[in-house]
Image 1 (cartoon, rainbow, N blue to C red):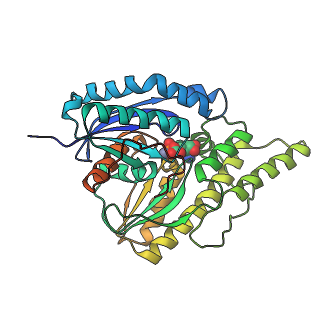
Image 2 (image 1 turned 60 degrees about the horizontal axis):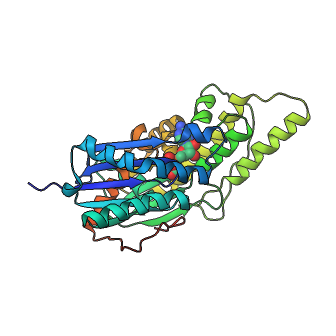
Image 3 (image 1 turned 180 degrees about the vertical axis):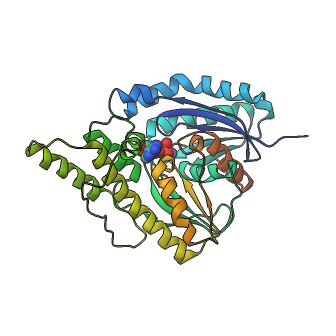
Length: 334
Ligand code: KG4
Ligand code: ZN
């Protein structure tokens, strides 16, 4: 019997990834080659370096994904690839690889939006029940997405400035906690206590987010204390920042849930790995027992190609196709 297999490629930031996914739900292989150790030396992702490493790794990762899934290109139904958003040079490597494979093996090419991939990662662990709200929190995104139905997306709220993951990374950097900052803050905050006061972010639109004011408040506090010669209690500052950021995130998410009354709330993106966020959202959802909460396991919160395979299969079924002139789109919209 013919199998419905998507070969998926993801290279939007600093992971070179390829996966084979069956019917959008079953992972046959999921290979991720992370560049974190290289970028750590620079304190953040260096786009030029990232694209060079993607070029070195892409064919190895694709071959490995096919080998682990024990399939050949002939058995692949379609090739899905992250078209954007992300770093232009990084995306370009994945898009070119996908185009070359699809053209050579005469397969349909399916462009996928990175964030839609993050949302569909939830399908590996749960059914998706529509209408749903997805809280998308990553290094480049902070969005509340309304999905009335399969493959239907409407943005209810977004960030007016920094993405939440970006704020975690920048705050960790000025506190000297290294890269990536999110996991470092998460860990430090576990040992922190209420000590520092930080302002609650404000926005004009009730479902929008803003994190740059909070980030600046941390910078100012660090500056003030340093001038006074007072040493900073890193764990307590990480705690104060994380609580302020997550409280506003959840307050808005729950406002959206009350207003739109979805059947399901799903979490998506790298910041969904945050242990305090996972704890808080589980607590908050108790207020609305009719809403089913899905939290993806840690392995599918951060960037991977399996999620692009899950979204890619649904996209394929909805007739989404890329032409041979498909190009990477760093600020691709929904
Ligand atoms: O989804 P992702 O892997 O890449 C993007 O699409 O941006 O998300 C990466 C982001 C980074 O900002 C990283 O610091 C953050 O996710 N992150 C976390 C945690 N793990 C990763 N933020 C807070 N707590 C964590 N445990
Ligand atoms: Zn991502």
